[in-house]
Length: 174
Image 1 (tube, rainbow, N blue to C red):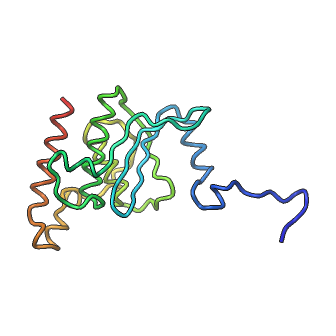
Image 2: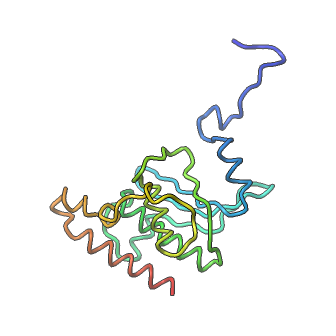
Image 3: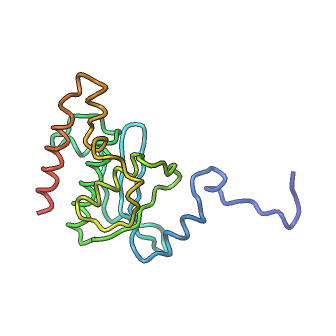
């Protein structure tokens, strides 16, 4: 075991694997607020966060559980739910006077077509200005749930349901 005056114990959140401080420093130094996307086993959470000296402040947040108010009947942790949550988040951010952000996916793996990028695409489609590469977002069929409808006979109406909820969220933008 390393002991002595030159041994440095890493920060607690780094030891726990919860924070990448190199990435966080780059995001905090940027002049735009961060669009923080987190996924759990049951929900997708999207927040607009600014860094303050006292700690981070959340300006706007959206949860995939809120989609039920707009008539969404599917699962709340899949790709279409992430897309709709991103749209809902952008609608709330626009109402709060925020127009741009930088994506923060935390310790999630940056795999092309991942759910965190579906939330990004939803926010961009709803009018939020976020820099991203076109090759990273899921295809339009996955965003609308066509892959779920092809797999599951009970979920044939999911594409229509996603389109209806997206239209309802876009009405809220006006």
